[in-house]
Picture (tube, rainbow, N blue to C red):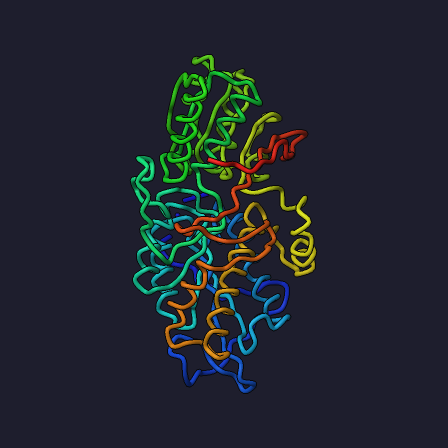
Length: 412
């Protein structure tokens, strides 16, 4: 998905499960971590996500899932001679904080890959820092197309801005079109009111949805914007009611989305609010005082709980003692972490069982070639660093819970 902070909260990742142990100093390899008495080398996987603030439910799920991937790799000795450690930094969904975190992670030679961030707007400020240092990042949640395909992707001009950027999430090109097709064809809605939060993720997603909805023959009867962290959207709700819309599409996150749904319904407009993966969270439902059954959200991938490939991940996560759920991006975060682990494995194997002196460059190169069966399905990347897995799901609020109503593979 996706896209507040004066001080950067830095915390080495620990959870209710085991704590990964750092090792001592390394005498060769330049970019590696330390050798302990047993001869293993520490490799750090960085994590950047909102660990506090309104989006922390998603950020904690990202952090914990990467932690689980590292623990699993260590337990199974996935990469002989390598011990993985995780260092998680809090960006509070603020671009400047993300940029500072990127600089901090780049400065630690043991860091050979970073999972994150959650928000596309944050990632825009981090990409260049990572690229300059040759440090790979794999986001489990960014969906803005320009991050991987360049600013002119909408004109059919595709150019990868940074070779160090990868993601396990499908882009908004896929998600926005998928949402428009469901709302128009499946839900039968023809007059939509479009609202966004003016942020990179929300505005971009709303624009892609709008173009596709119009292309299908639908009518956009009004548009408006809301401001992040504000709570009174009554003027927007009144505009929705007056427009005669049979639905609302919201580009943004669940804190504002839930309140918007609540206030729209309080006007007497009993129409569904639909959004992207930014609103697909239980907090969207709890934020609304009015019953919001019928509201809709798209999210990347198929429901993790229904994937045979995710059964072990779910069982191990539940057994790990994590106090927060893996949430919407847990499976994609585990796969992002595992992709980095597999890239490290390939770099070590190609260098006679040791980290090469240019480990970051070799890990980035190997990431482009990884291919494995992950929690969320087949994990691999195309020439832009985008996931080749373009599965999506529509969820509907029924009985106060999100229920999946349609899953499909989207082909542009």
